[in-house]
Image (tube, rainbow, N blue to C red):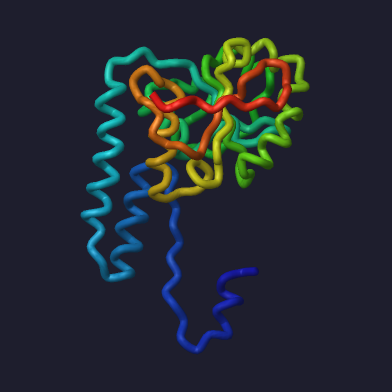
Length: 214
């Protein structure tokens, strides 16, 4: 239902904020706007989350960029958009298909195969991990699936997209740290106990292997 129609019946109407982040900097712009509307100081929270981003940047500075492909929808396949390509880059990866700050777009399977991803990260929009796991055969039944280096190496990861990747907000910083743990586990020991799991086979079975704490 439209927000304006809902508010028509209210005697005292609240202030409605339209937030439009398309990248991580936009998330902090939204934070400042919300804080101003609420009459609170945004700086302590902003400084805390910016420091976490900087810690990831510092650790990945100079590392070899691993080829990554993030999937935001299974059928048809949509790659990542908005802030996710930026997050991948900060986390020490490179998504050759996605564009930073742009909408997620449909990606033909030949383009995915040609990109030869070393890490395949599934973050379907609006799907819990349980739902996403049920939908996996939509991907794994494709003949192109087994040709992907990430699948052959067992480097396919299922994530909680709605919590950490699909929507703008400060939890994207958690998502950034999750990406860093996936892309460079030799640098980032696992700290996020929830939110992602490695799919431990290459033939479409639903076995999921969870990485152990280092």
